[in-house]
Length: 297
Image (cartoon, rainbow, N blue to C red; front, side):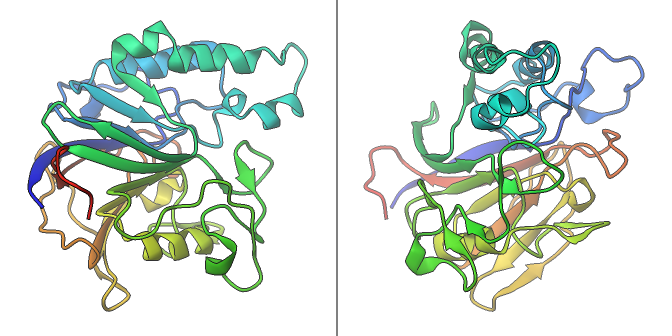
């Protein structure tokens, strides 16, 4: 299988980051970012939703030099979860706010910025560099404090019934595919025990880890747990995180020879830290993707 080097710029949890805010002068996003083939935003574009906040997020993404920018929602992007929004209307809120938020994320403003807002499921793209990208995306995280895109802790969104862990019930309508079917998995939350430690303990999802182990993508990127920002290399042969606390040399790209099926690069790309201060740089990662005219492995 012939491959094409493809550069990804990965970020998450930007929470209304304003590139024009004079109080945030040192953050890497404020400077000229390196070009990439694909931008991945792993959710929490906003603090608590709002049309103006989604527009601010699109403006931020528009400033990045990349033809394709793939975006999912996070638990803070309230209106984008239609079922949540309908049952959590406060004074002044309208059911139509969901449609307005989607219009921002999928309308002319987003299209001009190169933004593609992804629903849960598997998506395929042919890139300008001749590569084919297959990516699974999901904005859902375990329920905590009644935020959007939540599932209960005994529910499994990512595995079919025969693959789920004991004590959980599969509710997966679009489970993560098996090995060889996706290059990248982008979720809002982390898998259990991988870059997921916070004051409440390890907040990642064990069923998500089960699914990532089954799919073994080249890259799994996420955010949600600000305190876990960083990257680690998961070795599936030994079932351990073989290289932890990988150095982020941004704006230089992270380079690693990945053996498909043996290792997965895990990246928590949260820009904000535990105090909700934007201090972390994005990640720039080079992956070798199959050529678009090759058959999938």
